[in-house]
Image (cartoon, helix red, strand yellow):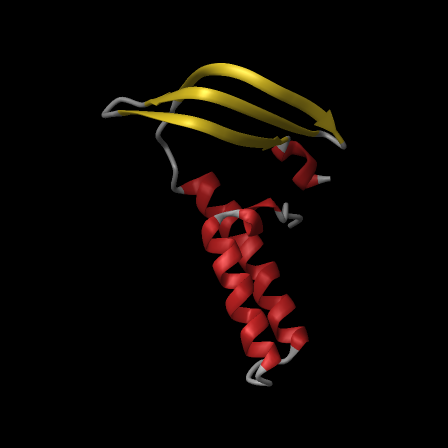
Length: 106
């Protein structure tokens, strides 16, 4: 199963990467094992989002920038409003990265 590495740029992914780097620097963990942990993180995030997240969100905002490169869409919105069934949240600036999940099965 192929995966995207974009979840590594999330808050939890960056914390994991920093922790693994510290462990490799202190010789607590080998670099090879750290890479295996990151690969497993990518797989686990993809599986969790596919199977466990069922809610839908609508997003409205002012499109500041958009880009399509290497089958990846990047949108930067300003004054965005995220709305689901239960709540809504205003965000000043948000970056959305969207990849085609069909590319994972190739």
